[in-house]
Length: 142
Image (tube, rainbow, N blue to C red; front, side, top):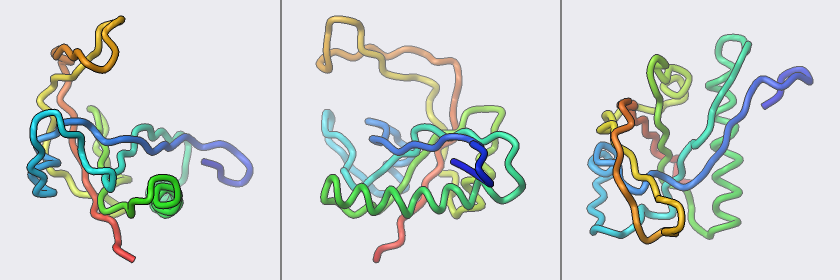
C-alpha cells in the first residue's frame, strides 16, 4: 500500500478460516465436517497500516477488494460473494466497518495447529488465549 510514493502498510487475501461458527451462521453455511468453506469466500489474512491519514485505510480496503475480486475470478473462476477477517484486541476494526463490514461475532479462542510430520491429515486444537472479532462483508454482485 503506497501513498505519495511512501509505503503505508500491507494487505493480503487468502483462504478463509476452515471453521468459524459466527461467519457460518451469518452466511447460512451448513458445512459437513471436513468440508472446506466455499471458494467464493475470501479472507483478508493480513492488514497493517501505519501513519496513514484518517480514511485512507478504509479506502485502501475498498480498492483491495475490487482488485482481489477481479484476480480471484480470473485465477479460480469464482466470483467473490463474501469477505471475512479477524480483528484481535485491542483493535476495533473501525477501518473495516467504515468500508461496510459488520461484526458477526467472536472466535472461541481456540485454533488448529498441524504438528510437524503429519501433513494436512492431523490437527490438534490449542487454546490461543485470545478471542478475536469476526468481521464479514457481502460482496457487490456484478
